[in-house]
Image (tube, rainbow, N blue to C red; front, side):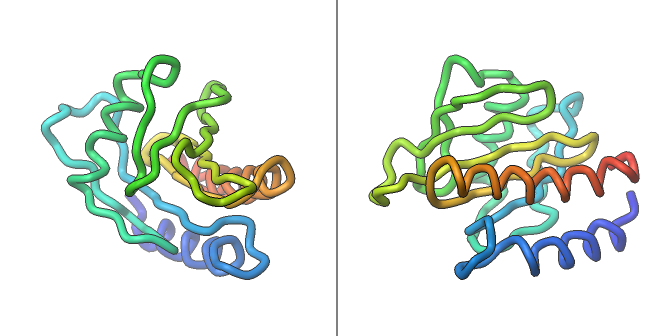
Length: 147
């Protein structure tokens, strides 16, 4: 794995995509992910921006993805509970069930060969479109290197 490429790519992407004023995402996580690996191994947070996350807390989320419970269960990221609304081959979208924000909150999860990218945003359709474009940009850059 080319960690220097991953870190440089993440830093460049996060500086223009994640933040509080004008950026499409409020937070993002890049989680090492091997769908064929044993469940007892904790996934490692490769990168994060805009939120605190603990690998132990993310184990349930990674299991949710690995066990393909997208259509049957909800998942948690931090204290927020999400329900999946759209499923595609390598990504899915979800909406937050316990948000206090009037426009709502959402999550986009994209899977590359080696990572799960979790992109969190505030808002509805317009912000979701901008968040998707931003998340897809990073996923594409990682996929070009077969990561």
